[in-house]
Amino acid sequence: MALNETRTNASGGLFYPLAMTTLVVLIVGLAVAYGATRWIDDALREKAMDVPTSTHIKTVGAQPYVVPAALMPNAAQHTDGFADRIDMTLALPLGPDGALSDVVVVIQPRGRVRTSAALLDTVYVHQFGATQTQGVPGLVGKPLEGGAGFSGETVWYDPLSPRPFVAKCMTPVDPAATTGTCLRTLQLSDRNTAIISFDPAALENWRQFDAVIEAWLNTLRQ
Image 1 (cartoon, rainbow, N blue to C red):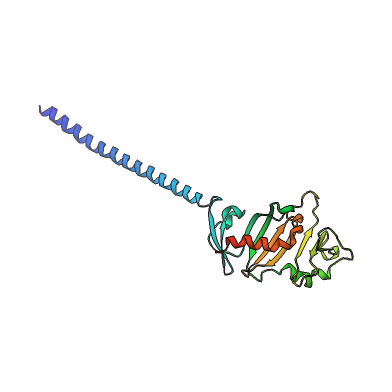
Image 2 (cartoon, rainbow, N blue to C red; image 1 turned 90 degrees about the horizontal axis):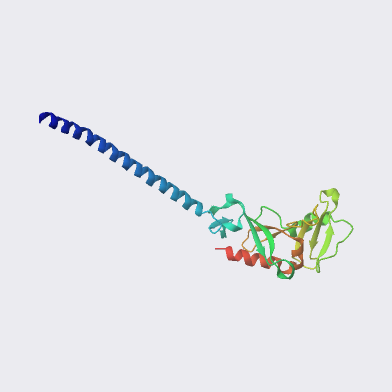
């Protein structure tokens, strides 16, 4: 009888620490699994915050903009707060007959770059060649002298306005690749500056060009 009791006590003594060890391992395993699940959930939540459906409040100068991430191709700009610039790709009705056309808009604080109208009087007019290009109703096209480093570039401007529309277009190496070969810089109503790259076909809508840009940006202003 004493021998059986000893064996029973020994078995019970061995079973208890074994059970406790198993329980501890189980608890630790559950904790690790829970922690891993939380980590995965947090990572997915953080990733979801940066999908194209998210928006970011970015302030340039004194103007906050609420910008969908899908409009900013540079993922590094998918943050909130003050910014030196915002790069956006927009589809605006500036193509022939109001068709949507891709337009790249870079917003910077006032004074970082000179507007196209200012460059017309201070730079471009001194580099005009002798010829004149036709093709855009209401605008004069003046090729720039190649000797000044402007080979293949033409300035289109409204000669009748005191605040003229001015844009510079570059002749592409591939005639079929005209995307974004024109450039216009203008002062925005919120006192920031917009640098706009667009297709030459949008020159046909030069009278509405600035108003379309302003109207779209106004939907982003906070």
